Image (tube, rainbow, N blue to C red):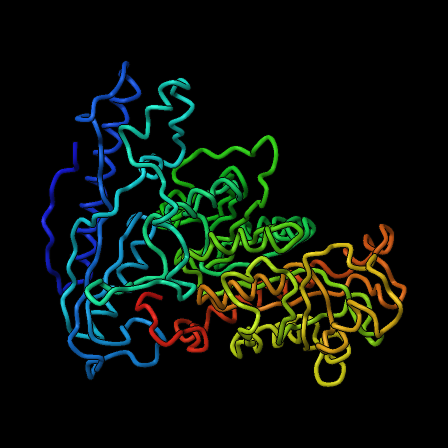
Length: 508
C-alpha cells in the first residue's frame, strides 16, 4: 500500500508552493495513520502485500547561474545558493514550519527568479513520525505484534538523519542534487520528538530566542517574572507555557492571540507532570513567535549538546548561555559577570563533529547586546561597569571535579592550561553551546556569573551559594532577557556571515 500519488508541480508563488507541501504531507500522514489503525486492530502474520509506505514532500530548485537577480536581498547571509546546479531537500511538519518554509521559498524566488518544484520524495516517513503529538503506538500493541511492525512500516533510519550536511561531511556525486537545508526531514522529525520528551512541552511552544541555564534558580525567577507579565495587559508576551503544556494567559487576550496560544500547546488542556522532565522548558510566548524559551539543561556538556542538537532544527534566531562559573582571577569577586569572547574546548563532546582547530569567534551583534544589557540593568558605566563585567576566554571542561587533579601551583595541570589560554572563567557548558551554535549556524553568546573562585580558596559551599543566588540570579536573568529583546530588534541582520561556509545551503 503506497500513498496516493500526487504529481510534482512547479510554482513561482511561495504561498501556493507551501499549500501543496501541506497537501502532500497531510495525504502521506493520513495514509500511514490509516494503515497503522488497521495494523493495530488486525491479527496474524502480515503478508508482503500489506506493507504500508508514504514519503516526505520535497522541494527542488534549479539555477543555471550563481548570479543573483537585481532585486535580490543581498543584506541577508542566506536565501541564495552558492553556485549553479540542482538543489533539493525533504520537508516535514508544514503546520509547524509554515512561516519558515514560506520565507525560504520567497527568498529563493526573489534571489534567483527561478521555479520551485514541489513533489513527493523517495524518503519514507517512519511510522512513529506520523503519529499525532500525544499518540504512542507501542502502548497499544502486544510484544509479538510490535515485533511485526518493521515488516509493515518504515522505522526511523539513522542513515537518513545524521548531521553530515551541517558538519560539511556530505559527499555529493556529480549527478546528485545538492542540499537546500542543513537538516533532512527525518532529522527534523527525530529532534521534534526528542524536544517533547526532554522538555515536557510541545515544539510548537518554542520561541525564536532561547536562554539555556544550568540552575533551577533561574527557572524559578523566569516563572515568577512570566506570571507577573501575564497580569500586564500591555505586555508584549501573551502567554507563559510550563512543562506539561501548562498555560498561563495574559489578561485581555484578543481572539487571534488566543489562537496562537492554542497552537503553541497543541490544544491540550495541560497538566503539570508528576515529575519534571530531564531538561524542562518554559516559554514566554509572543504572537509572532519572537518570544523567549528558557531551558534548564542541567550540568555538563553532554546535556548542552543534546539540547542544542534538537533546538537547532527549529532554526532559532539566537541562543545565549546564562549560567554560573568558577572565576579564575584573583581580581574577580563572587557575583561578577563574565562575557565570553573565546572558548577553551575541553568538553570533548563535539570533537568528532567540529575539530578543535576550528575557532569559535565572538559575534559582534550578540556581544554588544549582552554588554549593553548588563550596563542597562546594573545602571553602571565606564570604570564602574568594568568592575563587575569582564570580557575574556571561558574554559569548559567535562570533568566536574577538576579541582581534585594533582595541584602544585600555577605550573601544574590544569592551572597551567588556564593560564596559557588567558582564561578568566571555567564552566562545563558554555563552549558546547557556542560550538554547536557555530556548527548549526545559530547566533550564540555566553554571559556567566562567578559563583566561586577555587584557585583562590573560595570554594562553593552551601551557605555561600545560597547568599550568592539570592543576590544575583534575578539580575542575571533580567540581563539575559533584555539582551534577547535587543537582538530581536536587529531582525534578519542577526544571522552573521561568520557562520556561513563556502558552499552554504540556502535555507536559514
